[in-house]
Image (cartoon, rainbow, N blue to C red):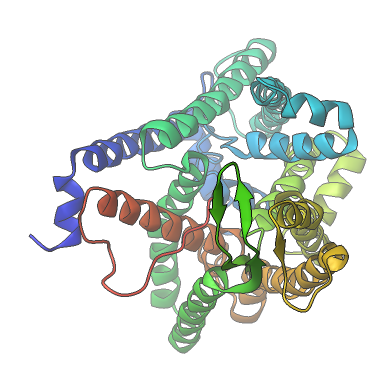
Length: 442
């Protein structure tokens, strides 16, 4: 009776939320293997099987974060990345155009901005889906009977199907957030990464059995993997507390006494967002360049330059992570607004003049964000390092670091914290007997 796992299914609300989330994830995985109309699945599988030994780093990268849906040419082959790309663009537009930001702050303005974001997602999906059809046509030149439709009907039908698939995934993510366990978009990305884990482990076992990989190297890398996971958890849970003292004040006819509290600044305030934003920004041109590059010379050059295992890609990756770490921290933790709220409520920071609070908070955030962003960047490029040093397959090295590892750990911590909160709300014990789980909304 005291088992928290049993308590999860004893609470009706939590049980229904978990079952609904599981149902949505099952639908997501079924859609990942459902091919778009006009594709000969047998010939497609034979083509990718023949390309397995040569290894296309760009296709492997796109396929990994789509949960295997890209190589299946499924209705969900674009995944949820177009929506994330558009959300980045929308946040940048809110900063660049004050009028748009003013609309978002008005009553009902948030819904208008979300409507603009959905329309933009459709546009991004149409561009990426057209690139996909061009890639399918380039494959069909070397594989007979790959396309069962003429080029024009296939292009229109594939663009419509893939765009609809991404919009359906966006709707599923919203439903999981409302009626499920929460963080629907993050859970869809999480499910796509976890779905690749059995295949990656089987491929690793096959290489060790064939003698292509040294077992000692495998053990060393897995020990390193456990250490990185522990460091990610430590980093995501760590925080710096800024003390704030509030003087006595009168509100109406009531007097509120002085109180001491603190502002919790995370070591990495933006969480995994910079890595997701950076990978999404790079994936968009990468997918277009790799899929249409066979027909356009300069796009082919861009595709080769943006090889995920190459130096240029990883340098841009690191720079974008640092940029988005500062950018998102300023959006989510604006020192000017925090200082204004402290002053309006009669608060003060010990040892800091009232007119210097913004400067103090900005200095603290800058000191926190720089090492946090560099830490994220090191984890992000870890798969490339593992591949070069130990000759690991891309499927397993992507799990050793980068976006995948941060998402796996972050979403897992956040889901556990939400489950624990629901259990305690219904007067049950949490998932942990000591301490407290601190999740992060991705």
